Image (tube, rainbow, N blue to C red; front, side):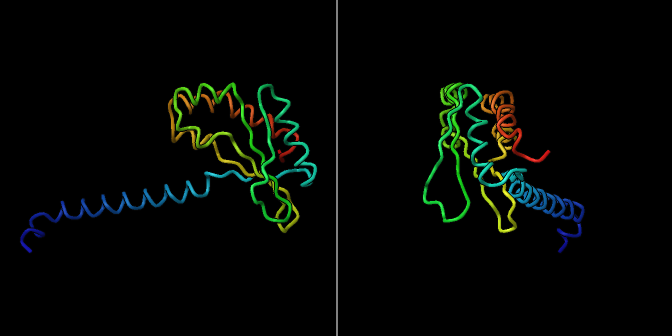
Length: 156
């Protein structure tokens, strides 16, 4: 008991510090859960979006687009896999572990309310977390081109 009385300030400081760390950690997890996947409303119908998106992506030099069938449930959902050799080669040469997140994927689906959405990894946020050369390649090259892919599809 004498220890607590003598060191009361230190005890309260330590408890406050631990409480602050716990709150920051919890807040960070909640933020990442909400922000790591971008869901973008489409201004087009599901069919028009599924037709327009790969056309936009293929129109940008160097990008290849494949439609993935990987056991998708019945209903209106399409998953596209996108890759650019221009970006993949330097990324995989310097940081081969990045191979686990490329090629990039975009899902297009219709919700029960009848609206069509595109969902993709928030690569801007994700690459800020990774940093280094991959972060720069995504920020300077891939993100602007992804924005062009979504032109004429997403709501302004």
